[in-house]
Length: 125
Image (tube, rainbow, N blue to C red; front, top):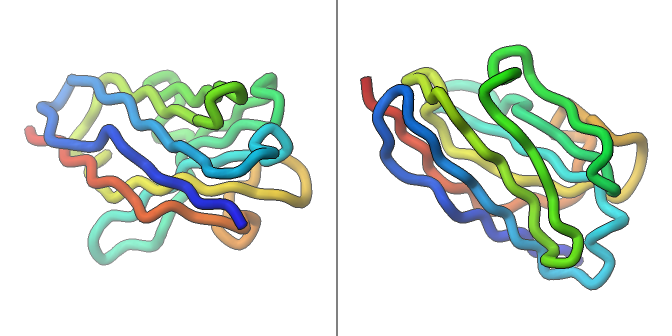
C-alpha cells in the first residue's frame, strides 16, 4: 500500500509561482512512476505532468508545458511540481498519483494505482 500526501497549495496571484510536494510512505518509492493531475469544479480530472521511476523522462500537458516542471527525489520519497507563470485557469485541486505497472507517462487516471487527497491551488486575476 502506498500513501501519498500533497502539500504546498495555496492562493497566489496570476503570474506567481508555487511548488507542490507529494510525499510517499513506501520503501520502494523509486519503482513507481508518478503523475500530477488536477480537477476544477464541474470538470473532469485532467493530466498535468508525469515522471518515470528514475526521473529521466518527463511528460507534460500542452496547457502547462514551459510553465510547470515535475521532478522527484527518490532519496526523500518525494515528487515535486514547480508551477510558474500561473494563470487563473490553473485553479484546481491538484492530486499526485503513483503507478506500479505499465509504461511511464500515463495521462489517464486509470493508469495510476494510488492517489493523494489533493491540495487546493487558487490563482487570482
